[in-house]
Image (tube, rainbow, N blue to C red; front, side, top):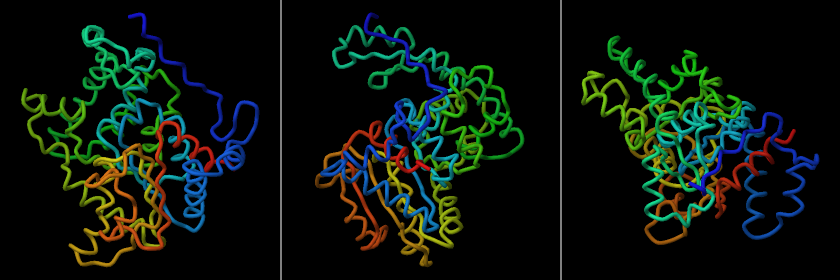
Length: 343
């Protein structure tokens, strides 16, 4: 198709936090972002820094298609620099970071995606190109390539009678080195690689709503894997999150940095009222809250609910620093990360 272009190469030299002319991103933001939605970017980024400097930890949630949007370029450095301590991600974001790692050069960008005809969409499908807004993920080089490898780890666990979370299978895959020959970007730009190196837990509620989740079900039905129990369930994710929350909030409260809405944010923030109201055990409330969202604030929309509503549910306190940045996370999050990472 004439509207397709190759994905841009990832820079190996660009440093997060500095513009090409050497101007500090932090200073640029502080100078220009003075009012309205932009001012919240500054306030939220500075409060993030203050929370960490007070000894608190930060929990990040990833909804939407952030991995296909290559947020890993900036998020991976945040993880390596100790600015992120736990993650809740959709199953799609977990796998799509790995897909990009091994198939980046086979992706196709469709700049004029808004004007595609139904016939052109069918043409993409027939080429094995799965479109996410302006970016097409290649079926064979990304999804099937990873399926062939991760299936071996599902089968191994099955034979050994062991069970793991989805992210643990991804960590086994990365640590084994079996996909290194396929790397097409610098692994430093993969947030899952960074999380693996730091051994950060990645909770993935609703993992079955993902390509690999679908593939796993298909392999169980085909008897390639004997049991669904090889992959730990959503309620087990919540149980593990309780343990992580207790351990990580012993000294100071944990902050909550939410990108997008949906299950990635809704699921983990509930761990506090679960502990306090259902387990009847004391724990700290979330100590910081920021959501980058393009969801319109409205009645009945949880993703569009203002942070104040979370006070009534026992998730945030009345004095918790809380921010909503109504914008595109692919634009705002890297700017905030650059601000936070400036030495």
